[in-house]
Length: 258
Image (tube, rainbow, N blue to C red; front, side):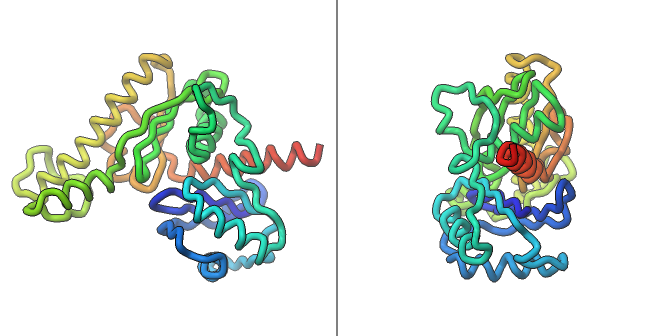
């Protein structure tokens, strides 16, 4: 089974043989790629692990980019000759959604909630460092309760660099200390420790509502930049969304067979 998680900035791909993850890749999301262009990319990734399109009999997709979803759907039909499973479209995440308008929740956030509850139990909080930094709360019995959305590390930093002509673009990694001795150092301090502080404050407030026993798991492409400075994060699980897609696929397949 091929699991594909399409974010606004990055796409994560996982190849599963039953429950075993046999290969995974992270690429930039490009909503302008056609199904044929995508097929060439995917074929190349799979070949690195000795796989081909013929190795798969199912594709499951979580996507927040409609144009990319359409191209992946067309690629699956053209090159696999079956319909992909698309979370929120033709397959449900299998989690009760306790917010005002359930259709507003991105499928990736529901997939993360499913995976977090299965791996860490409930209550739990998922912090996903992507284009936005999202915080999602899961109840003690696995319900999706809601969350918070903040501007992500990359887009916030880019906005600062673009708006302040004299500030240089910097590589985002942990500086030697909070007190910077030059502009680059100071920017790195503000970004890394600033976002870590944001995470800790929001998590602390969510824990006050959920209960102090809530497990906190971090995921997403930019998590490793900040997670080491967050005192409230219990686990870093970079492949959490792929795991959630596999769980949803397994449940769907079991229900279909029943």
